[in-house]
Image (cartoon, rainbow, N blue to C red; front, top):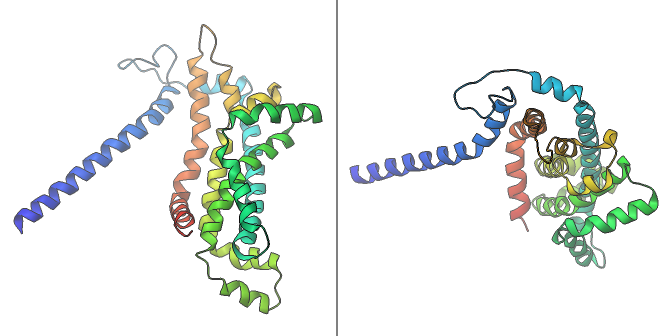
Length: 275
């Protein structure tokens, strides 16, 4: 028994040490970016001399980065709301309703996840150019919804299969329509899955760069990833603005992920297992 206890204790210590090492490895780059954004450009890469300042943030905002923040928040929020509504209704239809070609249509939706984004940029750019939708927020919202909906539907279909169908039948017998069943009965139950899919869609849209660089060319329409790119010069890089912009780009995802991680874990687990 003492030997087993010692082995178990040693195993727990090793597990904690490995977890701490991995956590430090993952957290260090983000922490370094936030600390570097508060240093002067002269001491940013110095390990000894640190001069703290908020000049990087003030210079960045004076350069118009606030507009880019608004663009990213508006586009991502609108796309997430729209993709969530579409995904919830589509997932309910695929999971509950019986119609001809259901599995074929679901497979066609999921097939969109297999194409690399880079091969879709050119045809989408040509399509929007011919329609006069370049530098248009509607085109970006359409793209964001299109790239986030397939996985969201797949996840919610799996999550819905863990919800008893007797709830739907009872609500329909009481006179509820399918729309009322989805949003008044099923929606509160599948909230963790919806949070997981909405968070996934937001993170996907927030960091997207390929479609944005092709569609959004005017300065007043650019998102945060596009705005950061202009500070990487051919010969000189404005590291102060880069670090401040990177910190501001990372902060919303951290603030959203930390309080919602419990819902994300449960939602992703249920959506991936119940198939």
